[in-house]
Amino acid sequence: AFAALKSDGSVVTWGYSSYGGDSSGVSSRLTSGVTQIFSTRTAFAALKSDGSVVTWGDSSNGGDSSSVSSRLSSGVVSFADPFNDDRLVPGTSTTQPSITLAVSPTSVTEDGTANLVYTFTRSGDTTFSLTVNYTVGGTATNGVDYATIPTSVTFAAGSSTATLTVDPTADTINPESDESVTLTLVAGTGYNIGTPPSATGTITNVLPSPTTLAIAPTTANQTEGNSGTKPFTFTITRAGGLNGTTAVNWAVTGSGTNAANASDFGGTLPSGTVTFASGETSKTITVTVQGDTISELDETFTVTLSGPTGATITTATAIGTIINDDNDDTPTLSLGLSQNVVTEDGSQNLFYVFRRTGDVTNPLTVDFTVGGSATVGSDYVQRGATTFGGTTGSVTFRAGSEVVILPIDPSSDTVSDGNETVALTLTTGTGYTLGTTG
Image 1 (cartoon, one colour):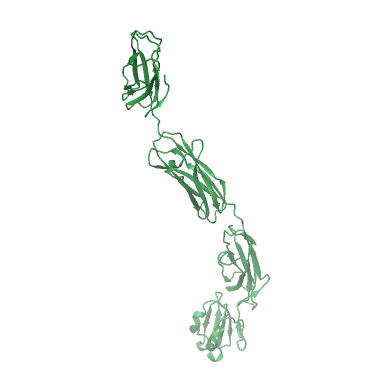
Image 2: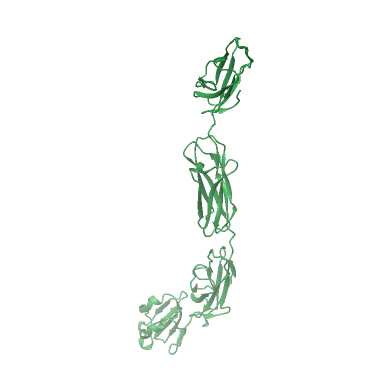
């Protein structure tokens, strides 16, 4: 009977079936991985790369190993008599290949793009595939500091090298020492351990850039509106190291010459906390401003950052401006006199001119005081006042009217007296402000 060992590690048999020409009973185990075949002419034994043994042929000459099959499942490296006849080995040499190990580059950063690449080299016979075992050591942890790697590597048939890549994993542990990854060859079937038998690569810790926070106005200078609310927005930007979470507090206070107060925000000055998730670079905070119809100066407020965790603040404040959008059309009143002097027995009168500017849409009553040395009723009479007493009076503007004229008509008498005066002075009231009085 005959047996042929192929380059892909499979076995082909032919010839007298009872002497090993028929290997169909173990054919599934002879399709790959066979490294050597031994024969006693009527029986065969195949040694596989995993250290197991497959036998077939004449049972009386070793073709049946079922009684010890559990002990031939791994770890076999050679045979004793009578399996020494017609020994068939791959190639022309029975010397096992020698395996050495190296790493390049020898150092990489934990958050970089480069990886540690370990190169296994076998010298000697490279005809068949070969699995080589090694241990994983060093201060770095497999599956934690780098992606999980196995503890064996397989050479393809015909190949003199095999590689293993170690990909470091970035973390947020700081400070942290540099860590090592050491691979060391261990004995196995079908190879010898050469020199160097191990290789060590280093994962260098890289301190992240400091994490910083800064606030800036986004839509923070706008009108408040007459009702409801309007959002004023600010952006907090995170820069530098972005791993891990970062939190910061913020609060609104009135600021500037005309400071906003709690009523501008619905009764309470806003505040809150912003939290960045790992990798996030910006957050928007919204300050809600209450609209009103009060005519007032533009108001300012400041949003201030404080109490950061995992970061430092580079720009802590940002200013918002509430722009007044309520037109102040409240009328302004002035009082003038057409002429200052008239005779008591003449045909001319004193004309007091009340004038309003601004909103003239509605009727308006304006108050004044009455003074001077002349006495109403005896020294003069008035015509056109809404009310007129001894010391106070009022006039009323019609809707749309800008002017009201109040005549003072002197009364003639037979009393010899000096010159007399009539003095009207505007006083404060509802719906108007005071301008010039006379």
